[in-house]
Image 1: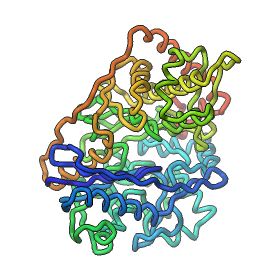
Image 2: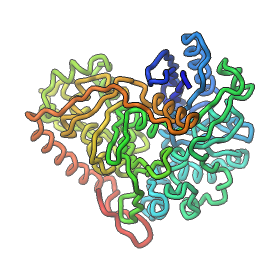
Image 3: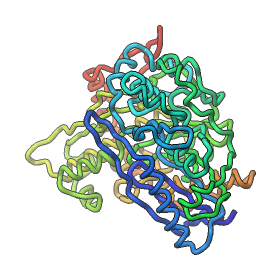
Image 4: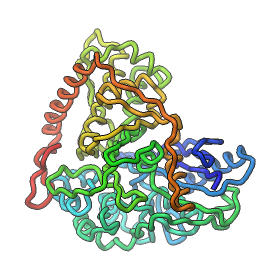
Length: 496
């Protein structure tokens, strides 16, 4: 296979990139996506609009290539709830992973042990924007939508169904919150704990690794490509980024500095510890004996964009603002928990809130920006420690466009980070999976990258800053009400 178009259907942007056999990008295109931000923290998307965006970017890339690609590979946002009928048509708008309508339910489940019970069988925590609470919420408030649905899926498989006519769910998407990652089968105990065992028929069985689909007539018309062209769907964007950024050895990890601050570490075992804090998940990979221990926090670059808007700046100003404030931000400290759905990793707390502390009349806008950037770094370090990072670390995502911020992240982590030169690592990762599916035995070559190391002169400052962050977070969690919540019946939480 020479040329494959990788499509990354993100929350805010859909991107398509054509890659040659060596992993070099040949052409690209992108389209902004529309999110419906509704009262009560509800966030929804229109499936037809998402599919239309995929068609637009693929057509543009194919036109730039001037020739037909050999295949199309799809990745994109995970979680949320994309309900469809048997023909792949949405029975209601898709509910985004950012949605907060089930926050009160998750709070109750954290307290009564429901989430801990499910976690003991799946190793997946829950947050308001995942299948467990969303299915339960709809069952109570909108049962007609579930009655009309044939499939309760995700973004990638929803788009793939519209292009190929087949339901093909990657095991990585299926992971949260009902899948036993060791068997790749749904755990009936998790479904029962969430009160949705009667809706189990809506959940597609994960497709075997290496599954290849084909464009049907309507899909071919949408993309402007020949009917029968191979299509590979998944893994979704978190594991796709790990693959595309070169995570190959057990213990190696990746930090995605994007809308989601996602930390992942490759492992060769799954440890369903009933005493562990019920957060994160064990993501299945295309290799049956490898998993990614994932800790995807709710807010990454969104927190930076918020503080930039607060001080009247843009992302183009980040490097200059960071240069105008010294490490430690002149005593200004922050929590980056700004999602209306709270936080999901490395702890679950729907009531988590952001804050800025240590302000005075001497505080400048650069100090506020640096404080938030440092706080995101501390949150990333917390997630990576919980995920068990022991090897090398790749850093990718939109935040890496600021090399100054990337260096700050390395300083806070106290370790070097490897930044892939290919910006669209999610698309590259799913293209690598597609090549392996179409040509068994294929191994993706390591991509070019640059390494940014930590500075010794700020190491002590950030070690102290991280210790203070963890202590203040522990105190805040007491106020939010999350410590000592049961992991399951008869179990006590062992704090991270």
